[in-house]
Length: 155
Image 1 (spheres, rainbow, N blue to C red):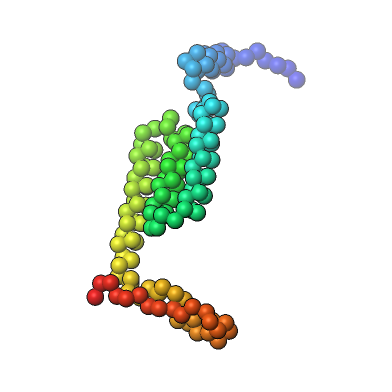
Image 2: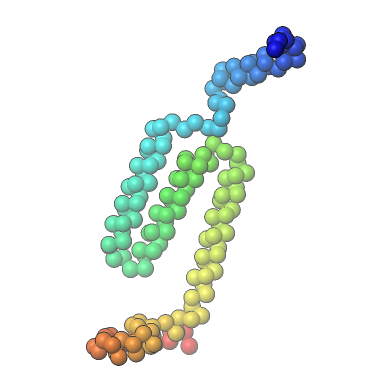
């Protein structure tokens, strides 16, 4: 087998690749994606851990219906941190940020419409056990609490 000398085209292509490779390093941009400093990743992970601990602590503090809002707020902050730093959204194209924010807005709208609908069936909610479950409990466990239907708030 004989080896032929490289052609002028392959030599030019290799030189062009070497120049592009050198200019990529000279400008400070890596060839693959965005490299995030370890300190940024560790700081983000620490914040996520603290927010998780806060979520667990708030679970045991009774602040009424405000508990769910605190939990959702912390979850939104954690999702934004993950998307921003771990998924590199901070360094991505602005269009991808627009898509992410748009998706979040549509999820919030969907949740708002679901919450608006809860007033329609409020009068059928029970404070205790559902009637069928209460019958089973009375048959198998006498002395179980009796289900009471809520008074109708909106006539």
